Image 1 (spheres, one colour):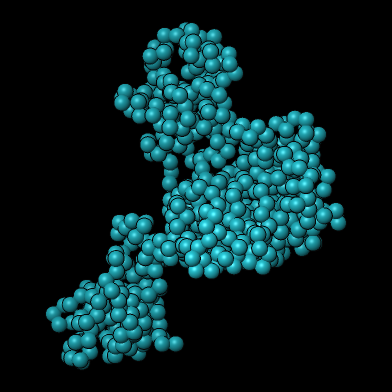
Image 2 (tube, one colour):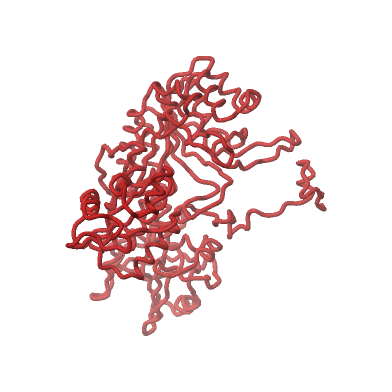
Length: 590
């Protein structure tokens, strides 16, 4: 090794030692002939000193050093003069009196400073990611990610799981998003797909009798991206045999609890609360509610029914609903603020926003005259409101009302600082509906994926009343973000075929896409289930960053582009010819 110590470990206990350090020039200061360099590596900073009285040649060479030069120094550990110590860093009591210097590499001026508080655009950071990762805040997120992976591996190993790698080049199957396709040169005209998840392989592993499997798995989805999505992402993939819902939830909770305690010293309270999907939608308007604040929704349809407000009456008669939330203590907000809240509700999908200010004399609103005194009192009681509160309501179809108020709810919490940012509120959402109706294609499809087991008592409704079928599916939600999704799987051939048919797959398509799975089931498949916590989102939440791109070493933009490498890029005509591919019907030049 060229170095004897890192730049983050020497202390007063090392006073007088001869040491060799390597690193990057973080900062240079010239003080009355002495040159001070803060030498940086992954582990920290150490101050090194060049004294012209020790060596004029060495001092002259030190004058040529610039930020981000890579150097090696040999010297002696000395105590800093009284009053010059830096208590903010571990090495703040000492400095290195340099006796020898080797410049290992020079550097151009970086496109931005290696400082944690600098305001740098994402585009610039990711184009120069090799510079960005020299910053402590960027690097520390990857270190936390590493710790999470190691803790998960150790925990699952101690629980009897074995780590198995599954193929990256696999078969295209419908799992909810577009596949990334890879053309085969050997089998011209045929394609591999990159896995959206290891779903089928981990189920086959259960059929194989491996009992408990896990994998830190790479997954790929060719979908429109948002700030919390990437075309390639990572999940802690888990599958278990001879289990039901409680077993999977229990082991997941214990793993997450261990990860938070060991990685960031946060003690989580378990078991996590559980609510059914219907309750989540009723109370919060979403299946991934943030429970760090109130503002829960109430269905006021029956309360306001029969009023003289025809907009509400016509909507109720057509099968719509009215739901509201109570913005406590905000009846004094201005008309312009109310207009802003209305715009937020409309952005969430509503056609408008009704409001009622709660006063000593009942409700104050442009539409309050349409509601008699008794109805106003009933509404105030229903909403648990008091003088000074503001009731906000949306009327429409159920799905629209829930979506709009869920969006408004979180917007209000941010706008009025109702969220305790230091809390980690985990929540299980269980008993999802198995099917959801696709209006565009006029057919039923899977709410999760087609391998999810229905509740036994609901199997009879798969074909005759799909809306009644509940799934043994569960989502783990943290602070309003879906962290993980899983389910107990179908493990018998008959039920799986019935499900495939219910979502519109023909016999030939079933055989072509899933024949190997159905055949595996015919050789004795155990009951099994699993879950896949999203590693990127988990680490992002743990480190307090808004974007999962910050916790991925080399992320892509919202347009699935890597600024650093330029991927995706064109390839040569020769490569395309070997694959039997042309673009827009035209063969490319070699």
